[in-house]
Figure 1 (cartoon, rainbow, N blue to C red):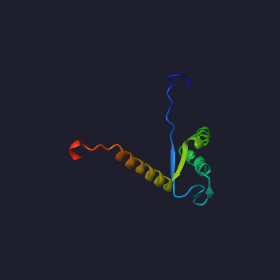
Figure 2: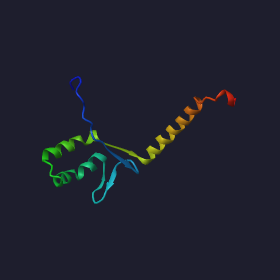
Figure 3: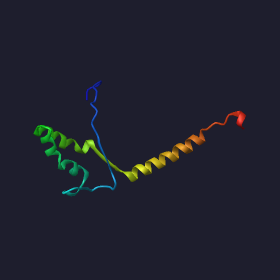
Figure 4: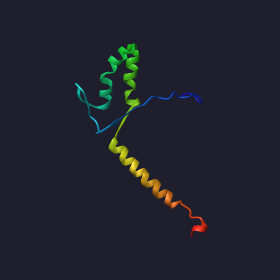
Length: 100
């Protein structure tokens, strides 16, 4: 990319799952996330009036624009972050001279 050129923001599809992949899709069985997202993409593009080239571009972008996590991972990270901030705020807390 040339110096000074601006990157376009890349859209992100973030899936929050109850369990890690493979994911279960109605009437399709279990799939890895990329394959599951790709499964209905062609029909969706056709309904939206997109070209075959648009479909191919979207299909190719799945590995870079789809991410997943689980509710359990979110809870674990939130809990660890909360503990860190509580400890950090207590360590840096100053008691005014009048309260000593």
